[in-house]
Length: 140
Image 1 (cartoon, rainbow, N blue to C red):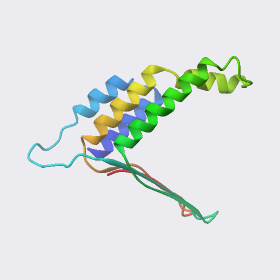
Image 2 (cartoon, rainbow, N blue to C red):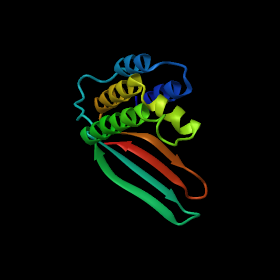
Image 3 (cartoon, helix red, strand yellow):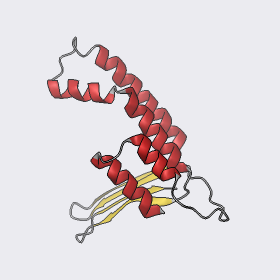
Protein backbone atom coordinates (compact mmCIF):
# COMPACT_ATOMS: atom_id res chain seq x y z
CA UNK A 1 0.00 0.00 0.00
CA UNK A 2 2.68 2.49 0.97
CA UNK A 3 4.61 1.89 -2.22
CA UNK A 4 1.40 2.40 -4.16
CA UNK A 5 0.93 5.90 -2.73
CA UNK A 6 4.50 6.78 -3.68
CA UNK A 7 3.92 5.38 -7.19
CA UNK A 8 0.73 7.42 -7.58
CA UNK A 9 2.44 10.62 -6.43
CA UNK A 10 5.37 9.90 -8.78
CA UNK A 11 2.94 9.54 -11.70
CA UNK A 12 1.27 12.79 -10.66
CA UNK A 13 4.66 14.55 -10.57
CA UNK A 14 5.52 13.28 -14.05
CA UNK A 15 2.19 14.57 -15.39
CA UNK A 16 0.85 11.12 -16.28
CA UNK A 17 -2.26 11.75 -14.17
CA UNK A 18 -3.92 14.85 -12.73
CA UNK A 19 -4.60 15.51 -9.04
CA UNK A 20 -8.19 14.27 -9.14
CA UNK A 21 -7.09 10.98 -10.68
CA UNK A 22 -4.35 10.69 -8.05
CA UNK A 23 -6.84 11.22 -5.21
CA UNK A 24 -9.22 8.64 -6.69
CA UNK A 25 -6.39 6.11 -7.05
CA UNK A 26 -5.26 6.72 -3.46
CA UNK A 27 -8.83 6.32 -2.21
CA UNK A 28 -9.19 3.02 -4.06
CA UNK A 29 -6.05 1.39 -2.67
CA UNK A 30 -7.13 -1.89 -1.14
CA UNK A 31 -6.75 -1.82 2.61
CA UNK A 32 -7.59 -4.29 5.32
CA UNK A 33 -10.91 -3.14 6.83
CA UNK A 34 -10.36 -5.11 10.05
CA UNK A 35 -7.10 -3.31 10.83
CA UNK A 36 -7.49 -0.05 12.74
CA UNK A 37 -5.21 2.69 11.47
CA UNK A 38 -4.72 5.94 13.27
CA UNK A 39 -4.92 8.90 10.91
CA UNK A 40 -1.65 10.64 10.21
CA UNK A 41 -1.33 14.07 11.73
CA UNK A 42 2.20 15.31 10.98
CA UNK A 43 4.92 15.50 8.36
CA UNK A 44 8.59 15.13 9.32
CA UNK A 45 11.59 16.01 7.13
CA UNK A 46 15.21 14.90 7.59
CA UNK A 47 18.11 15.74 5.26
CA UNK A 48 21.67 14.62 6.09
CA UNK A 49 24.70 15.42 3.93
CA UNK A 50 27.70 13.49 5.28
CA UNK A 51 30.13 15.07 2.78
CA UNK A 52 29.36 18.59 4.01
CA UNK A 53 28.84 17.37 7.59
CA UNK A 54 25.46 19.12 7.70
CA UNK A 55 22.00 17.98 8.58
CA UNK A 56 18.53 19.46 8.64
CA UNK A 57 16.03 17.83 10.96
CA UNK A 58 12.71 19.63 10.91
CA UNK A 59 10.47 18.63 13.81
CA UNK A 60 7.18 16.99 12.87
CA UNK A 61 4.85 19.64 11.44
CA UNK A 62 1.12 19.13 12.05
CA UNK A 63 -0.99 19.01 8.89
CA UNK A 64 -3.22 21.81 10.21
CA UNK A 65 -0.13 24.05 10.35
CA UNK A 66 0.88 23.01 6.82
CA UNK A 67 -2.65 23.89 5.62
CA UNK A 68 -2.41 27.28 7.34
CA UNK A 69 1.07 28.01 5.92
CA UNK A 70 -0.04 26.97 2.42
CA UNK A 71 -3.12 29.20 2.58
CA UNK A 72 -1.06 32.11 3.90
CA UNK A 73 1.68 31.74 1.31
CA UNK A 74 -0.81 31.44 -1.56
CA UNK A 75 -2.57 34.56 -0.23
CA UNK A 76 0.71 36.51 -0.10
CA UNK A 77 1.61 35.34 -3.62
CA UNK A 78 -1.80 36.50 -4.83
CA UNK A 79 -1.23 39.99 -3.39
CA UNK A 80 2.33 40.21 -4.74
CA UNK A 81 1.26 39.06 -8.21
CA UNK A 82 -1.34 41.86 -8.37
CA UNK A 83 1.42 44.40 -7.86
CA UNK A 84 4.12 42.58 -9.83
CA UNK A 85 3.98 45.07 -12.71
CA UNK A 86 4.76 47.89 -10.23
CA UNK A 87 7.61 46.00 -8.61
CA UNK A 88 11.04 45.59 -10.13
CA UNK A 89 10.85 41.81 -10.65
CA UNK A 90 12.57 39.77 -13.32
CA UNK A 91 10.45 37.76 -15.77
CA UNK A 92 11.23 34.42 -14.13
CA UNK A 93 9.93 35.67 -10.78
CA UNK A 94 6.77 37.05 -12.42
CA UNK A 95 6.18 33.73 -14.18
CA UNK A 96 6.70 31.82 -10.92
CA UNK A 97 4.22 34.07 -9.13
CA UNK A 98 1.64 33.47 -11.86
CA UNK A 99 2.08 29.70 -11.55
CA UNK A 100 1.85 29.78 -7.75
CA UNK A 101 -1.18 32.07 -7.91
CA UNK A 102 -3.11 29.26 -9.64
CA UNK A 103 -6.12 28.46 -7.41
CA UNK A 104 -6.13 24.83 -8.59
CA UNK A 105 -2.62 24.28 -7.19
CA UNK A 106 -3.71 25.26 -3.68
CA UNK A 107 -6.83 23.11 -3.92
CA UNK A 108 -4.85 20.14 -5.27
CA UNK A 109 -2.24 20.29 -2.51
CA UNK A 110 -4.90 20.44 0.20
CA UNK A 111 -6.78 17.56 -1.37
CA UNK A 112 -3.63 15.40 -1.57
CA UNK A 113 -2.66 16.21 2.06
CA UNK A 114 -6.17 15.26 3.17
CA UNK A 115 -5.95 11.87 1.46
CA UNK A 116 -2.44 11.16 2.76
CA UNK A 117 -3.68 11.66 6.34
CA UNK A 118 -6.19 8.84 5.89
CA UNK A 119 -3.50 6.16 5.46
CA UNK A 120 -1.66 6.41 8.74
CA UNK A 121 2.10 6.49 8.97
CA UNK A 122 4.40 5.80 6.02
CA UNK A 123 7.61 7.09 4.45
CA UNK A 124 6.76 9.36 1.56
CA UNK A 125 10.42 9.77 0.55
CA UNK A 126 13.25 7.56 1.81
CA UNK A 127 16.53 8.03 -0.09
CA UNK A 128 19.90 6.81 1.14
CA UNK A 129 22.94 7.43 -1.03
CA UNK A 130 26.16 5.45 -0.81
CA UNK A 131 28.08 8.48 0.46
CA UNK A 132 25.86 8.80 3.53
CA UNK A 133 23.39 11.36 2.18
CA UNK A 134 19.87 10.82 3.50
CA UNK A 135 16.58 12.46 2.51
CA UNK A 136 13.55 11.25 4.40
CA UNK A 137 10.03 12.66 4.49
CA UNK A 138 7.70 10.74 6.78
CA UNK A 139 3.96 11.00 7.29
CA UNK A 140 3.38 10.38 10.99
